[in-house]
Image (cartoon, rainbow, N blue to C red; front, side, top):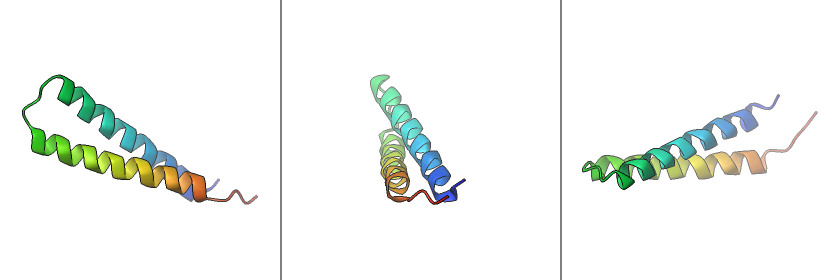
Length: 61
């Protein structure tokens, strides 16, 4: 059980959730653009850092 890989998966899922939320609110024409920009950027950061952790972590048994 690799903690880095689990943490990377959690970060990736949080990033996907943040990006879906941002897209959903933009489609529904929400007026809180500043909040959406912040949530979208944090979602992207979480997503790409999670993918990087999962990809770069070696499996050691």
